[in-house]
Image 1 (spheres, one colour):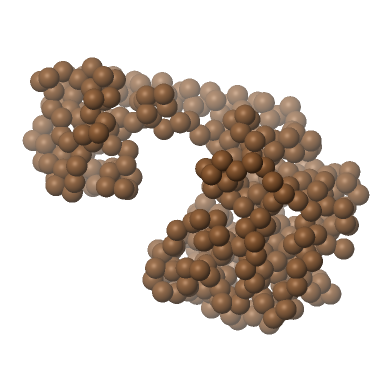
Image 2 (cartoon, rainbow, N blue to C red; image 1 turned 135 degrees about the horizontal axis):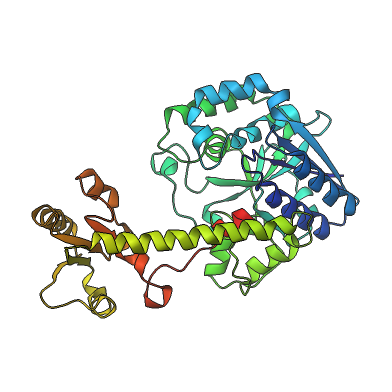
Length: 405
């Protein structure tokens, strides 16, 4: 019997579909019997629980549920008190459920595979399960194996860059982990003292165990964004749709792989289309509001532009810039000073179109403008939002629609 584990907090009720889709791909690609262990809290609705059970039943597999809020309330509350920002973070308090796997999973199990919800299987998980860990705590795929640059925690010397791993797929040695409860709590304390690092469970596990892992081939946790960027064909791998890698563009083979699985889960129901309609309506209203804000902001004002010299000809064409309109070249740090000086001089008379999405290899610092007292839509506009992808603007990412499914 192969044992795998998912952990999640589902405040919107829309997260369970990712777990269900991942489960179905796991079951369909694996010939051995599998038991799925799900660590959750009271945000798992009865309807979503039934859908997850149905997926397992249809595939003649097993799923078990563990309410962390009931089984480990004291430990969970202690961690949340230590790091209260977790409740408002993108990953949610569910990231701490992962830290409790060794204590919650039955003690007769000496190993388990942990999986993030945005994992999809295109290989038999037996390949991963049959790897011997020996005296290692985790089997991992490093971030470097996926071509990811150095993380701040590595630059600061806490974890070697070559050891820093992604926590989305973990082959866990439960026998060893059960003796490391105090070590993990020290990791939580480290997170509490280093809030500048964005990661939660991944940071904690790396801080505690980065030197005690077995490094695995990248096929066991291949980032979709990286595979897509390199033009890789679909292969026998475990795919990780990290970030906003999953969109509705089904001509993309990686998106198509996920949706072909999702459509065979009970999470595809009539309500999906209503949620998509509402989300699209919200997007349409947002675009209308932005257009109106531009019209209002331009009332009785002249235009000015902050634009990189390499983009100047295109921007002149798209915006029909006149010869008498102010243009500040975005070339260096001094250019930013010139922009701020000009905005102070012409405050109330000109509205500045910021046409430099990336400035000095970083996203343009709009917060610098707001801290200086300037107001978006009144004193300046992010001009890139007005350009279609055909004109060099950012292509639309439909991940918000995926979340609404």
